[in-house]
Length: 110
Length: 414
Image 1 (cartoon, chains in turn orange, blue):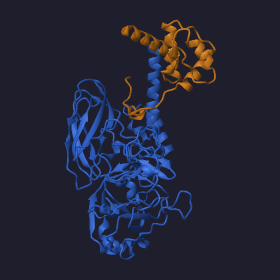
Image 2 (tube, helix red, strand yellow):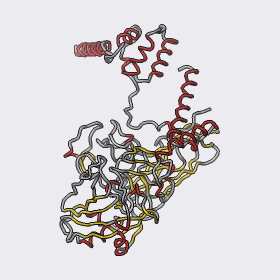
Image 3 (cartoon, each protein chain N blue to C red):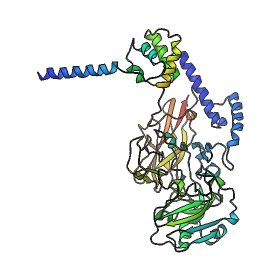
Image 4 (cartoon, chains in turn brown, orange):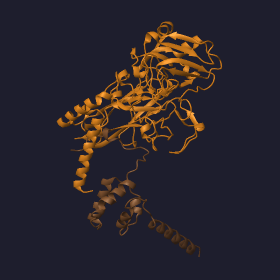
């Protein structure tokens, strides 16, 4: 009986978390609906909101999804999506210790 | 990322690196200079020259031009005794234009002197015994650029420090000439620099130290750096020097010293200036001014000054490295380096200081195990067992006292 109660409790908890995740919202901003509509057919928005990248980084994710995950060509929406993501989910600089600045790095491999 | 994209990313990074080196005015220091890069660098250097500070090395990094603030790249600090042209510049106000040493006078007054005295610079030099010490001068905000959330102010990286040889008279001898009362608690300075606003009634900065620090052997009223006149930007013709304490205590263009029967209360003594939370706080915490405490001795710290960061090194040979270590009022007992991000540490050869409150030189040779990207980290330990942290230490509202390990990058090649 006790085990049954525990199982119910876990189920409720898991359901709540799942519900919370599927209700994830993008930050309000221009074209956020286009971004939502493009992403949610395949995955939760949680996968978007936990990531940070610049425009180039988001583009490389889109290209990877197009090459491997069946994402369709985005046409004129691509620029809007990139504008939105790089503005509202751009890289954060919240380091305890940042990488060395680029001017102190050795030359890249030639 | 596809191969093509990686290629594009790489060339963009290479371009950025070149650009950053040029804007740092360091074109000649490119590790693999191409003819074109050199030509561009020469042009860039010429364009930047107009911002250089008279009497200062042209490769100092200018952080601000009103007021003038500039720091020294780590590789320019390799000298055991920092030359005047390489010493950083930190101004709170506008330097004076009338600095005629023949007319310069120093006054000592305040609640806690027996009598007010005024001495000509020439009398000061003639009537008091001269002393020379090599003393570390470091801005309290050195390292501020690494704090997060960011702290406002000049974004010093590692270069607001130096250790020249200073010549002058003991502050103690001059204070004793005026007579120090038993109730003396603090000394404060006033300089001839003027407020940024141009308002002649405003003092840009007037700080000081507790009376016991003022009375130490090494606390100087100095007129010379490495045997020559002070550069204008470093306080010509007369300044205070308190080794190992925030450099803002070492007043420049010194005209007046006040001996106080309470903590000195000049501009930038109170509020948030040169203070940290009395009790540690989480990053980003809003701290009440009443919970901020004055910074005294600076923490243990070190620099790797050779080689410069960003070099290529051939695997076959050992790499000689060197630098300095210092610890405020304390001394450094150990300097270790790591090439694996702190998993293992190797001791280096650490010299004794030239005198109390001077930095200590260290050197070592590193043999790399394989080709690839390496960072060299240096970590000093002081005589009380305190070590430099590998991450940025306690956040504070104004971004003082970052003594995190210095690190440089090396690519080891075939």
